[in-house]
Length: 132
Image (tube, rainbow, N blue to C red; front, side, top):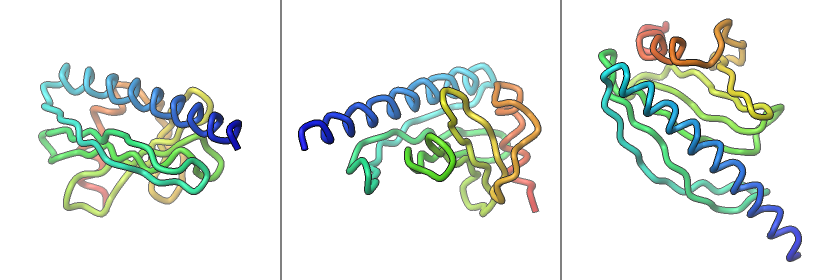
């Protein structure tokens, strides 16, 4: 039991560390683009990991408020998932972590043809806001 608890804590620690790096990167890109950001703490509960705290990132872009919404560490065929969407809009992109890399997918699971970087991030608000 003690080993399982330690493994869970280690897994949560690795996941939340990866999220802190991602959020810091997106905050830096947002600042360079002149977009204001704020963080919002929330609790996530996963069957295999239990409850833990994460931060979502709220980004004010010219196309609307973009939310970087942490979903879970344990997801099918990946090592974590974060959703990106414009408030009051049903369209979203999925930011999927595999190993140490983040990749974008459409809401239907199609891999986005561009890599996850500042340029792709800068295009997302307009893309998500205008998706049909």
